[in-house]
Image (tube, rainbow, N blue to C red):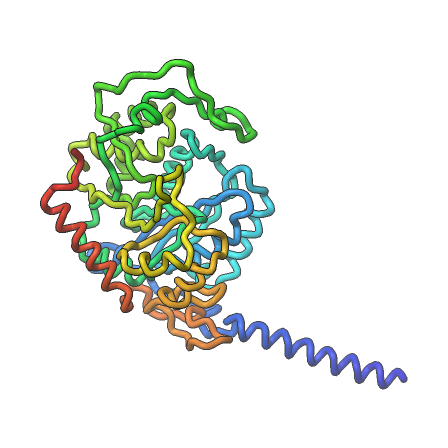
Length: 397
C-alpha cells in the first residue's frame, strides 16, 4: 500500500511540474529574451519620435487601463497610469501586478502606476492639476519623449504605435494637436463666467463642485480659448507650462481654477496667448467621436455600427467605449492585430505568432518601425491637417 502511494505521488508530482512548464511556455515566459537585456532605445533626430502617455481611470477601471496600455504599448514610449482617489489601494496594487507581469515592460521599465492618487472632480480644477502633475512626472523620469498624449479608460487607439510613429516622424516636433476656438458661444455663459469651487482641493472625500452666487466678466488681460479636453502636446510646450519662465501659464492656471471644466480651457488659452507657441497649433484632437442629435454632455458610446465610420475617419484614437465592448474586439482583431492580454505587435516584436506564443515576448531593434496597411487613412488625414495649418487657417484666432 505504501509503495502504491509513493508511486501515485511521483506520478502526480511529475504531471503537475509538466503542467507548470506548459503554462510558462504558452504565456511566453520561455522566451529567449525573458532574462536578456533590452535593446538600446535611441531618441532624437534621425530616430522615430517617442510618446509619453498619461492614462487615467476611476474606481473599477484597473483592467480597462491595462487593456488600453497593451493596445498603445511600445518600448520606446513612456507611460503613467493613474486610478483616481475614489479607487481602492488594492486596485492600484493589482494594476501594478498586471503591468509587471508583462516581460517586455519589466525589461524596459517604461510603465509606472501612480501610488498616491490625485482627487478627480470631473468639472473642477483637480482634473487639470492631475494632468499637470503627470506631465511634470514624465518630464522628470524620461528626458527623451517628444509628445504628451492624454487618454482615459473609455478611449482606444485606431492605429498601431508603429503607424503613429511613422506618420509623426515626418512632422515638426514642436507642433501641438489641440482643438481650440475663441468663439465661446454658449460656453461663455455656462462655463466661463460662472465661478465654481472644487472642494476636492481641500477635502479628502470626493464632493461635487459648488457655484458662487455671482458671475465674473470676461478677462481683458488675455483671450479665453476653449476646445476638446483631449490633447497631444509637444514637450517644449509642456516645459513652458511646467517650468514657467513666463508668468502666463501660472496666471491662466489661477484663472482656470474657478472655471467649469478647466481641461477644456487651460492649455488652449495658454498656447493661444503665447507668442512663442500660438503658431504651433494644429486644430484637432486626433479623435473620432460621435454625438447624439441633439448633442448631450458627452459623445455616445461607440458600437460595432460605428466601426466603418471610425476606420474611414483617419483618426488616431476614438472615444467613448463601454468596458469590453464588442467593437474593441473588432479593433484588436482587424486593426491592431492584438491577441488577448498581449501588446499590439510592431516591428520590434520578433517572436512567432501563434495561439500559444506572444510574438512580443521576444524583441529586436526597438528603434525600427514598420507601418501597416491602416496607416494610409491616418497619413491622408494628417496631410490634410498639416496643409490647413500651413495656410494658417486653423491657428489661434
